Length: 190
Image (tube, rainbow, N blue to C red):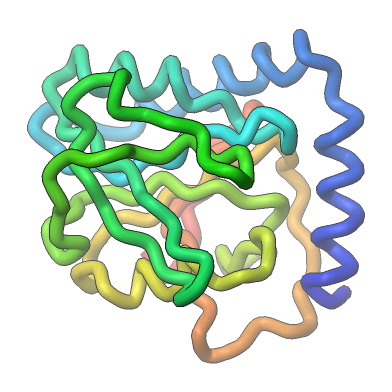
């Protein structure tokens, strides 16, 4: 199936999740995430959820990572260039919802993507090789191209099934790990 078709199907599936189910699944994803590695002193690029799109609630992840001593990095999106810049999260007052409903940092220290250890990415669905379907603008693929080659790419998603993506291209960057409420899947490219 083409990404545009998959995007429509999985946006609809996610929109049908009840809030209590969304929170339960988000908590299970967080539990799996924290079982993966020692997060202390890691530099982690984390997305914050767009609530109206019912993304995985990553605020509990943010709080726990900070408690563990990780450096939290949030991205700011430039919709003219379809690129993202990273900023160190110093406090939560630094977070503001932009006009598209995306929680982003205002101000703060810029951070070089080449120094990121882990990128936690949103997605709608993925295939068995770790290629993901996002919202279709390629923000994360461009961003990941600027990270160091061994950056750990972890996708978090409510849906554990894998689909065939017919229009994967040379600019698409596969995940190393996918975390769903049910399990942790490591891809062979990791």
